[in-house]
Image (cartoon, rainbow, N blue to C red; front, side, top):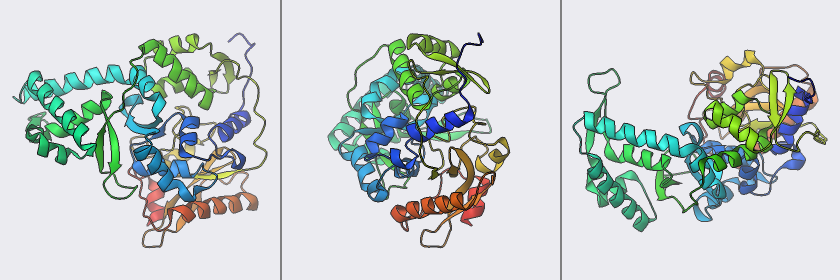
Length: 396
């Protein structure tokens, strides 16, 4: 460090988070598209997370479900697809090409090679056969518009073929061509997740052909994505950037240089903000509370989280794989967790795990956030796909 970089402390980082992630009351959004644009990406591994993350940030959450479904499945202004770290996200549609070029191409090549290698080991047909099946499946999907794997197998029966994966090993299993092929096509940006089977909380879904997107230069796409994310989440360290993108550190450093990111001093060392983003934010003017879902992009946005999440809270709030559960926020930090109580009409219950600075004003605001959430979720049962210790206790 040269000693000339501006220091950005915890209070300022929390203020930036409140404003840019649309969590403070005056910053809430009008549409789901505005939420996704502000956050760059919403975690989509659990479909309910998308709706809950949007609802927490809308000025009027009453229309969360129909409006989010409209954006995803009618207007297609949002897309649910594979992105960083081989994870499913929801992105603004205009970012499809950027995400695919910056993070998907390298992963896609590995995934297809792995599938062909596993099929060869099992004595399954070769790459030429798989390409024929792929072309037929994509053609069938284009005709149908949206379809499940089972429906596509009616049009292309070879999708039902099975092969043994990892024969003789403890994790040996029988895989269906449709399951493995559609996953690879998703990483390759050829198909995306379509409407769920059932309600908005369902983990079962249809597939759809991915919309056309420009074929971008990898380096240019990485710079574009990093600029968007740093604007939403900066300041951040190299470790944060490497973790969120899944890139090599050399890719991160090249993109930082390309966008002219400015170094700053953080409590954990050197961080970066987007060019011209050194000025402290104005606000938020009022204290704020929020109930965010499991895998919310704010709770999962950085690898180093001590500035908004006390380390001693992690065992209660995360599962064994590092997935965060539902969180209660007060003025830019995680202070507890929440859940829906089983056997009720949708009652939202919450528990404070960090009472530092928590008084009657904070508890009242958190209670109002819980009622706000219950008001639009209603009696729909929402159970996180990845359960955490405190969420299990609260929902029991």
